[in-house]
Image (cartoon, rainbow, N blue to C red; front, side, top):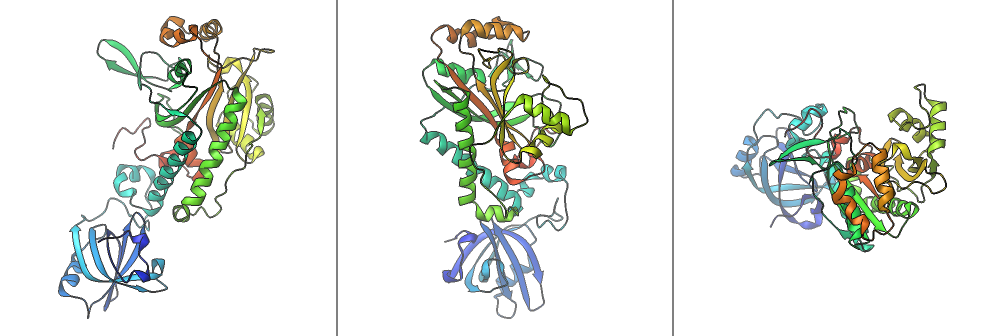
Length: 430
């Protein structure tokens, strides 16, 4: 019975493993194979004078990245991966791999990101790429557990919608029979509607679509958003939930993914400490004005250059709070004492924005007024506005980018490395 390679120890006595031929070395009297599965790598040593004819024939015929089954005695050896080697009595080729390979899985020959993504199935065999997605899986597990343990209801909202979440032109139109429709930018409108349903605390992890013509290392046109909405809470309350979630997720990865972190070279992986600092938008602009040459003024959005200098000043995760109402979505609640500022926030990593949220407008008439101020037609949002006439509670929420969270957590250079099959301006396949 086969066992995962990572579980094989000298105490196993004998073992049967299956996996891919990672490397081959022939030293005359001895042949060495490194066999890999998702849990690790084991050295298979074949003494040619003692091995059976069947083992020798298979070892001679096999190519790198072929799928094999190997069984035999396990021995301790200091210089081998994991301090053990397997001497095979069985060496069976389950499926032969063609040569040459589209890219080098051992990574002795570097490949650019486009080449890697074109052969993603092969790129994902690399231990460090496998590690990214094992950690992503662990992070998503931690996030789901966090919400369930706090009484959230998991929901799924439509990805084909009739109206834009925030207006604007960043939309993918689609043919929907005889109607105009779009791929959804965010579950925002629907998760707010669930507050009117009395669900009180909801979350969704799902795809969002933005037709932004960006070609940067941090933008995707299809991304995964982690969204929450909570009733009877203000923006400070959901900020506490967000920072607690970040700490919880980092801690889970720290405690459960040591092997994967080692494969990625994350030897200094640190769990951030909450609470995160709160930086006023006005103070963030002041920092940017001092540190960058490009003009930036109060009322501008904070671009990449400003994010970098502000992040360098702050040093870790932090919030930018109290944004100008004019540059935030219509559903952000203005302050009563100064409606020019709203109860909105962004969660920032020193490299980039990770999440955006706010306390929401829950009064129907004020929401209609806000929609009109943005140059939008309230009639287009009637399905969304209707619940606000029938007892909408105060509520707040946020959306967190899963790919950006993983990218910054693991120090990846490009957000495309944090998603298996990225969609950007130029990539629609595989």
